[in-house]
Image (cartoon, rainbow, N blue to C red; front, side, top):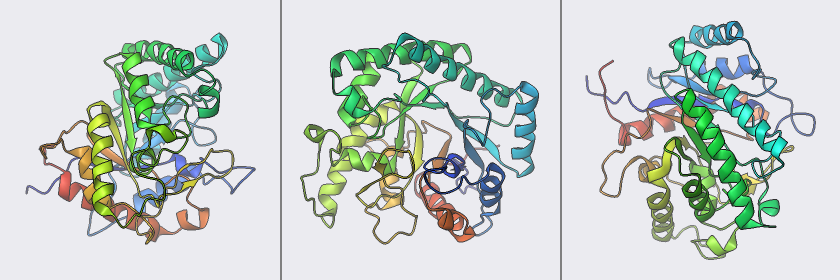
Length: 345
């Protein structure tokens, strides 16, 4: 049997929290996210695992090792593994005060410990720790040079801590994070960090907005009032961004985007995560994923062992339908069929 079994297919748990809460829709419980993920099935294929947001009320970052084991046992009971983890670093911007920056690094340390315990328990065979600058583009733009330097210094300290735990950090490319809000500022930040265990988390929805220059018009690739029916120009734009950022990419989110920005609750506007079957989606998901998963010569990079679907800011009504997750899984399977590989296990 040579049907592709890599990359592993993961679902994200944090869409049950992000954009939810008192100023939006109710949080979807962690157990519900696990249940919906585990129940998804397409032609006998199921999700292999979940990526975890170490975020209240789903997960307590200050969990004891025994509590982490209980969490691992719960996830394993659904026949799921754990992949990448989101560190809750938003208590202080990476370009903030000394105290705020120290808090940032401490949250990374706690996330790395959490990840190591899960690795030692055998439920987390691969994955990274996801971070961002916890800073707005508007604040960053007040002093770009100095603020980028501060972010890089904070990331360097976080990388040094992560290295003690054998972890890599993936900086999320999203237009709502200062210093990471365009493809060029993202590369500049990563180059300034200059650590072997820093990389880029590519999300197909967010990186689509890099093409349009939201929050950084001078870095736009596609023209204003772009005609989305011009697939050739869109492909060329995707190739430009992927060529620049693929060498940094160590974590990958499959997603759809309709070319607009979106935010709910307290979450700043960013790339709209559309449903896998959204007729307004601008991406050919399986084909366009290949620009991240293959190099310029068409060879698989195998830079990460799993891919994840991020359905942030889907309405609760959508997220509570099992068909939503079946459709997502079907699209993930399509990506793996086109760009996956087989490894004996």
